[in-house]
Image 1 (tube, rainbow, N blue to C red):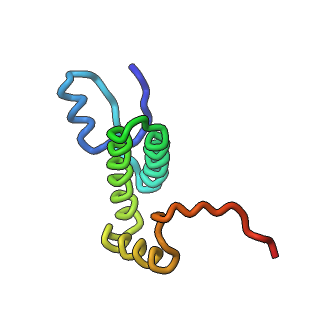
Image 2: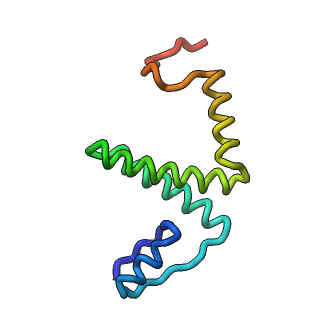
Image 3: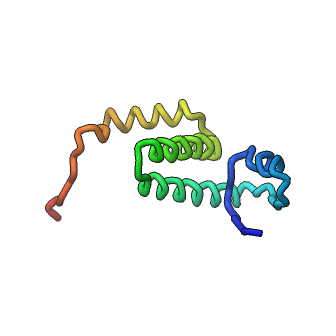
Length: 108
């Protein structure tokens, strides 16, 4: 039986059950959940970077967005509050729309 040892979406156990396959799982503690959520976000980001088509990229971005929703909740905020933080940073420092690529800055 393959060992996965990773955070999965909430309905994955039901999906596996419908295939009549044996599996094991457990519910993570708060500390474990935060650690595994970060690992999963890193995994999905890698999959986005390695995507070979727009369709694959969008699927990975959807996973990343779902994980961002979970992470924001984990840190005691709503997604709307995160959006406000994003807007303030965009107003103060800009976005990433102009494709600015910084090469170097003189040291003091």
